[in-house]
Each structure stands twice: as structure tokens, then as C-alpha cells.
Length: 165
Length: 165
DNA sequence: CGCGAATATCTTGATGTCAAGACACTTGAA
DNA sequence: TTCAAGTGTCTTGACATCAAGATATTCGCG
Image (tube, rainbow over all chains, first blue to last red; front, top):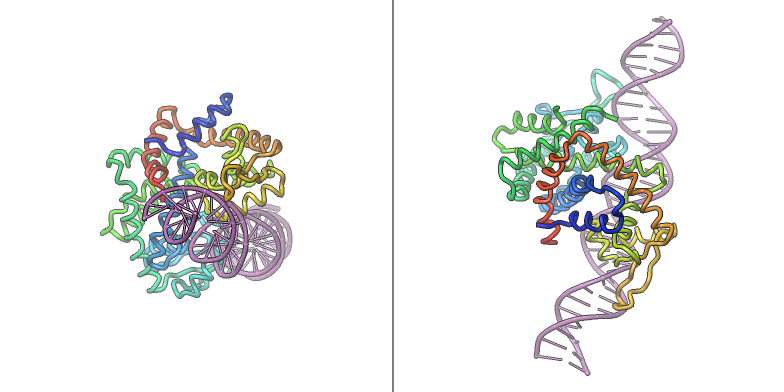
């Protein structure tokens, strides 16, 4: 089946036959799919009164395992936002009693962000919901195709994740 | 090579061995890669005094071919933003003399957005730069792998693009 | 030990985005 | 022909994000 990127690439080949637009076949699809996923997640989470950015922070902490705490800096590398954004997110989650700030005992510049019991529940509940939604989206693909896709994407993400800016 | 999603999936398997988190292998990589691409594009475009959102709108119009005009509604489906956002974008691009608004002669509710000569130049220049950057990012992959990846991604995007919400 | 560079977090100000709804025009069915 | 429903665009208000820089603390070299 054709998608919007097929139309986009065809249009460029007509308008700019001098350019090689093949890279768009991959990377425009990645960007567009991410936006579709964002929308779908926003709608799904809104039923549980949760914003996607809240999910990202809460589940990062949940994954860390007991006692469910990370520094703001560690949260930055997991969520790919700037430090100002993370400060703001922690402020808002603190107001909602989903996380709390603790001084880092080993570095007085630092802070630790810890999940509250309520925050942990919210993380656990919403993860199951997200996985259901994602399984539906991936339904088209066979197990083998999903593995293939994951492997190819890993090759693209690994440089970003390992040679940090 | 390992990436951040490998670590994320391993953490979930440790913390929530009862859940099947395999969907994350694909879709978390898509979301994270899109964020990395956004950052890289923002940096690359800033050298030409161009924001990613400006690029998206200008190139959508450029692709349409002479006379380089589309309705705001058509631009919505190409850029995946809401109508309020598009109104705001068109306002700002108009102020910069990159596009202009014309009344739609066949529907008095409607408007056509047309690229100015300056806007067209900007679109053409920035596209070449983006393609160079994307080629570098894809450099790791063989031609065959890129085609494989594009095909798998198309299967995921096609439902979103063809069964619109 | 002492000091300059590095690190961790927060603050500030500008800006872009979204959701919801208002408004104007068009369409189609009776 | 008429009007109710549909469509296309814009307005509004709240809010999340970013870049740049401030502040406090730690680290490492001499």
C-alpha cells in the first residue's frame, strides 16, 4: 500500500529530478511515524489523565528499579529533552505528588528524583496500556519482520546514543 | 552495537518480567530516532536561519509544483499539525515574505497559500542541505538495507496515512 | 593545597503547539 | 428553495519546550 511519503518522494522526483531524494524514503517515514505515534499516545493516555511527557518521566524512574530514583541528568539522557524542560517537568510532577526531590547525599550540587507510591502505580498501569496499543499498531508485521526492523533501526540510533553530543 | 533502547528493554524485563515488552524494540526506537533527527535538523537549519517548521511548510509548497500553492487544509495533512498551528505558521511566514495568502477563487471559505520567489529559493537551498545530512546518517546502511527499512516502515505508516482520523 | 575548568541543576524570556470552539461558507436532501 | 449538517479556516487561552546563561559544587592538575 502507498503512503504519504511515496507521494512526497514522487513529487520531488518530478520537481527536482536533479536531486537524489532516496534518503527521504527512510527518514521522512521515521519522522512522520513518530508524529502519528505521539498523537495516538496522547489520545490513549488522556483516558487515564496522563500526558505523554509524564509517562516518559515516570516510566524512566520505574525502570530504574527500587528505590525508583534517578538524577535529573540521568533523566535527560533517557528522555532527550533539555535541562530546563526537565526542571519544569519535575516541578509539575512534584506538585501532583507523583515524584519527590531529595538531595543527593554524595554530591551537594545534585538532586535525586524519586517516584512516590502513587507515581509508581501510575507508571505500571499506563505501561500495560501503551503496550496494548503498540501491539495493535505492529499487528501488520510478522515476528520476523519486527526483529528485522528493530535491528535496522538500532543501527541508526546506536551512533546517537553512544557518541553523545 | 547496543543502543539506549536495548538498555531500556533489558530494564523492563528485569522489573516487569510478567509483561511482553517486545513492541518497544521497534516503536521506542522510532520515537527516539525522530527526536535525534529533530535535533540534528534544528542545528543544521540554524546555519541558514531556518526553523524545522519553516522547512516543512516551504517544502510542502515547493513540492506541489508551479504555481506553488496549497490550501491550509492540504498543508495540515502533509505536516501533521493542528489547524491553529498552521494558521500561526502561515502568519509568521507571511511576515517574513516567504509565502502569501490568496483567496480561493472556487470556495469563498477557503484560502490558498503561495510561495514567494524568496520562499522558493529558501526551500530549494535547504532541501539540498537536508539530504546531505540524511545521507550521512544513513551511511551505515547498505542500499539493500535502506530499501528493506523503507518497506517495513511503509507498512506501519500506510494505515495512518490512508485511514485518516 | 589551591585554583581554574568541568559538572549539575535551575532560571529566564521568547516562542511554538495544542484543544476547543467560533465563524463563514457550501452542500445535499426534501 | 430552504435549511440543517458538513467543511475550511481562524481565534483564544493554557501550557510545554528550547536556548542561553546563572549559580553552586566538585574535580584535577600543578
